[in-house]
Image (tube, rainbow, N blue to C red):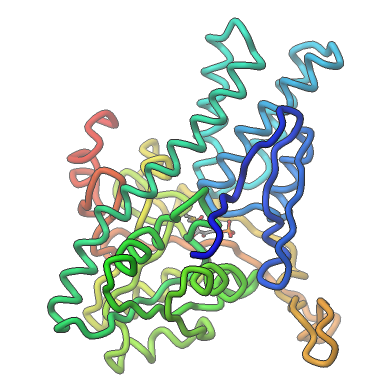
Amino acid sequence: MTEKFRTIWTTSDKYVEVIDQRKLPHEFITVKLSTYKDAEIAIKNMTVRGAPLIGATAAYGVYLAVREMIEKQLDGTFLDEAFVALRNSRPTAINLFWALDRMQKALDEADDFLMTAWNEAGKIVEEDVETCRMIGVHGLPIIEEISKRKNGNVINILTHCNAGMLGCIEWGTITSPLYQAHEKGIKVHVWVDETRPRNQGSNLTAYELTRHGIDHTLVVDNTGGHLMQHNMVDMVIVGTDRTTRDGDVANKIGTYLKALAAKDNNIPFYVALPSTTLDMSIRDGLREIPIEERDQNEVKYIHGKRQSDGKIDSVLICPETTKASNYGFDVTPARLVTALITERGVCEANEKGILSLFPEFQ
Ligand code: MRU
């Protein structure tokens, strides 16, 4: 990678900076979040997105709320309101609630509110970097094994959405094993699902793979099954927004169909996740994971760069009056998941497997 960057950083104690991911891949624009409302809006409108990054942004949102409360001499109800607003910013990724609970706990035990909030948010960010690096360390042997089996020929990996560094802080979850394999000289080629409607695949995954110099091909979301039937996929690896105690996996809408096709074609289907994405309080993903529904215009309009003059624009792709539904996520049942790749190792997608690596969740 030519120039190293993170997805969230601080250069002042007055604001936190993020990349406006809605503008990628055509423009690299950074924005300053100066209030908790800025953080709330950035999560809602997907300036930032991806489970770990949503959590980190919410954590800094709490810091910004504490700062504003002290500066304006407001009482504790202001902070309570900030927690509620941040909690309501997006429903599916558990990292959001995990980060807010962690910030709340730190503040409950704090003498110096401002310093505590600043330090805790910073720790959440640093820990995610190391966690994702370790997901790569544990995922790498899986790729090495396939490479050996293929006598060093190119490994074809299919992914859906963006569970790369852009969804985290650095490394990414699914990309960490890929980047580490690439650094070791293993030949990797990635099939990138475009991921309608927000196109995280074409806008973000393709962007970061390009920056890392990783060979990839963009495909429309419906292509995966065909590729798998024709022996053109060696493994599927996706991220997750919430994984239950029994190993059910919520991820970007369309993930379930990839898992079904992988099962039918005997192709391993891996899910890479930090333990912060585990929701050990629920078991049945289908019934218990809240699935976000977003604005219908995200489906009705396509956003991109005009071929004619290079200007960024949105175009309507259906009759004006046609209504659209926009489910953000679906749930892949544990039985379709080959294994979970975590920062502590690889395990089966079930309670026994998860507890073997994370006994503290007993
Ligand atoms: O709607 P998004 O872009 O926030 O959805 C992101 C995903 O579904 C990712 O796969 C998931 O959050 C994992 S990011 C490491």
